[in-house]
Image 1 (cartoon, rainbow, N blue to C red):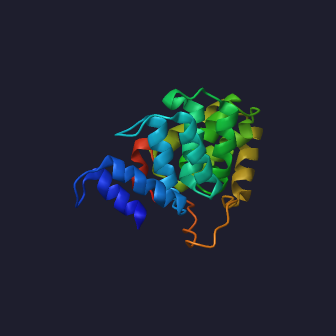
Image 2 (tube, rainbow, N blue to C red):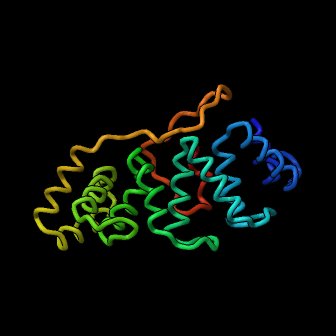
Image 3 (cartoon, rainbow, N blue to C red):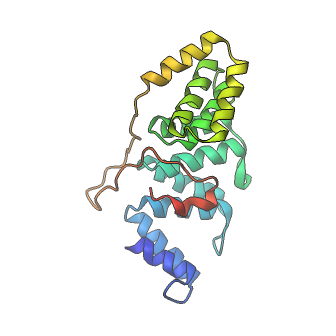
Length: 212
């Protein structure tokens, strides 16, 4: 499709690299409903990567459009950007939480760690130790052999009261996935499969590892 043609032009894969044509076709793909193209445009405009002119506000708007269409990547990068203040965007923990929570509720595991930390510290949301434990425990259950998650649970076990840990376990046991909202309805092209239960990239530069 148009997205993959743009990607080929951008990287010189099977054709001579042509950044100007690549951007043109990437925008065509996004306008035709490709959430991955929307994400790429948002990311490039935020970072000014490759030949793209850095335009952070336009980049945020593309990511919000991507998220509004139900993309886990859009929710994640918006949360990541606002929590960390990347690309010159001011830090806004409350705004980050607004984007992280729906992504986590839909089963996007990498966001669980962010939410656990934010609930523990009261960062962008009222502190809630039980909720911090819940998200850490859900991540541990998803990746039982991951030492990072094991260490996180041990840290919370030492810091939280038995009551908070018990409440967190109860909430984790009761957790049910809530699909990401897709507020934009299109007759064509057909919607892409919803993205749930994935480990998201470690940084925006790793986006190509996940299709969503």
